Length: 332
Image 1 (cartoon, rainbow, N blue to C red):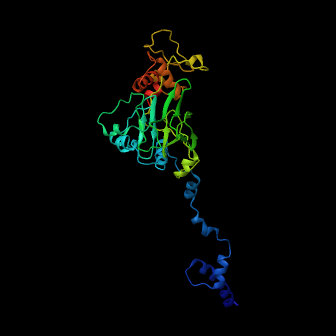
Image 2 (cartoon, helix red, strand yellow; image 1 turned 180 degrees about the vertical axis):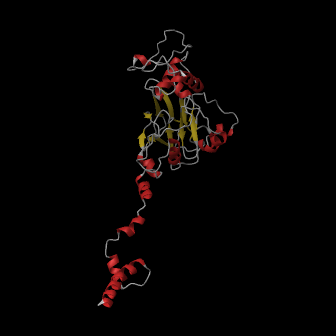
Image 3 (cartoon, helix red, strand yellow; image 1 turned 45 degrees about the horizontal axis):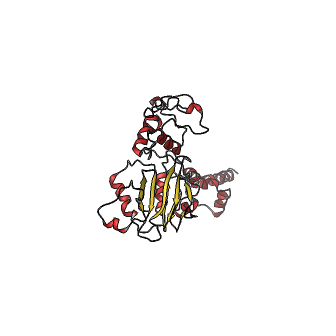
């Protein structure tokens, strides 16, 4: 009897020993041990950090990066503008260009520093001649899309309308133009917004306003062409210095709150009034640099022009005035 009890005790201990040792086990023992769900064995395969990364959206490009991506996929051909305004020229000069806006193509960029810019085809003699006309001339071609005969001598203009406070594309050439693939016929004018793509003579170029003031809005067809998600946020603010000049006072736009208008009564146009915010604060003071003016980009240009003694003001004058008038832009 005692020996048999000893055997039973030894038999009971053998499964425990098999479970805690590396000794060979019978197929029956393996089945018993693995018969439960294998969740514990799969847990190491669950990688929570990767799952979180999948849920997070990839970082969206800022406006400068987005413009660069899209312009690389715009239609292009060899034109004079690609020589006159090549990107390599701007890169060699470095940053710091002050402009109202820019027209960006695949390999060239034209910075708009005047309120009226001509697009067309300059006479061939002007390319061969050493004497180049002044860009102040009304007929001067700022953006030369020659030598293609599809482009007229005076094909279109990009100009700022101080009444409507908008930039317009005025088409003159018989072959017309396109804006975001929609035709604009000769004699028609199209109000431009930042991010719209102009096509003239099979050359596509994007009209871009400073991202610090005007959000970039790009048509989905150009986003898809560049392989950019249609849902990519397009109004990211760049930390670079504003490309354009902000604006001045004494401009009374219908609907503007009286508290935001100039309160100075001096008739001397050369002595600009102090811009006052909605809360009655002086927006020119450094202590108010955190307050962004409620005026739009177009309004500020209009204000600057109307504040000038003769109603004319160059880009540098507008830029200087805005820096002096708004601490917000002065400290950007």
